[in-house]
Image (cartoon, rainbow over all chains, first blue to last red; front, top):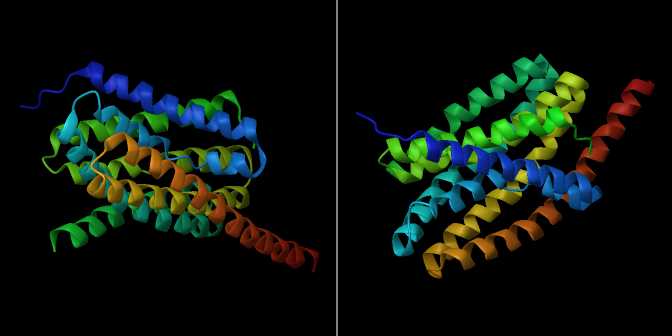
Amino acid sequence: MLNIEISPILLRFLFGGSAVAISALIAKNFGGRLGGIFAAFPAVYLAAILGLRMDYEGSELLLISEQLSKGALVGMIADICCALAASYFILRYGWKRGLAYALILWAVLAPTIYFTWFRL
Amino acid sequence: MKLNLRDLALRFVFGGGTVAACYIMLQIIPSKSFAGVFAAFPAVMAAAVIMAGHFGTSEQASDIALGASSGMIGCTICVLTAVFCMEHLNRWGLSIIIALLIWFFSSYSITRLINGLLGKIKEKRQQKTDY
């Protein structure tokens, strides 16, 4: 039986949400090109990596971070395809269906790339 | 860049939900690298597209998605650097700092490139509507 406590999940929810919100605020305050760069700050990835420090230390922290980063790398490649597809689908089907199709594409593409890359 | 409380709240929920989901996956799935895939869920892009689509037009939402792709290329380079540094330097903190520095400079270059491309697309759209 799975035994997952609620408080670490809540802590990570607050941590991740804050990281994304703060990067959006920084992006807004800087404005212009620098603001545009911070609008795409990898806050979710960074929050996930920094969150590992709560559970792991030393070489184990390094190993788990490296493994999580390899998975995130696959996810990021799928992200680029998802964003390009969203841009196309939104113009063709409207923003609701377009975004839904793009996210479905991500959900199919990310595991496909992962299993092709790491399991073959 | 317009940002209101609703936009911020949506980004907070999507970002926080993604990090929490990644943590749950880390606990459930034996493969830590597969759980890492969820750390890259395009939560921020989805939130930005929803806001643009809901309060603006589909064209604006499409432009935001295209613009997000440049940021995602920068993020991919950042994660690639983090993996490389963790493997070769064996230092957790230093690897993250180097990855963030590389992210900044790569994002700056890519954003300049994509902004130029977006400008050309908008010009073409404008020309079409003028005719």
